[in-house]
Image (cartoon, one colour):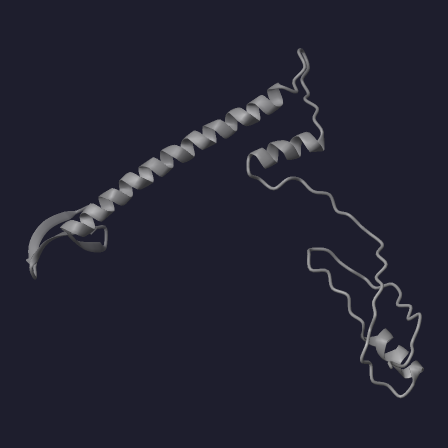
Length: 150
């Protein structure tokens, strides 16, 4: 801060403070609000520091419990690591998976001249979407039965 001075601005006295190139004019209430927010942030910072120290001890305990006397290496399972990560509110390590899926569907309301045209419409217009990360390919579409609706 490079400059302090007070002045009366309307009915309420104000304080104007210049910090580098920025100039701030504060009332008694706005200054009190800033001080209260600062105190609140100090409390939040202290809580965060305690949590970080606690997490550090959790990590140390995790590895210490898996350390064998006289050994330079520590062995743990993926399940152990994921348990630690979950306890730290961190996403666990994951594997990628593949699956072969059989989908059975009933399609109604197809307007076509005949069964062959209906079958062709179905085979050329079916889409399958996966709503999660991953890729999906339709390897085969087998329309087993086409019949007129009643």
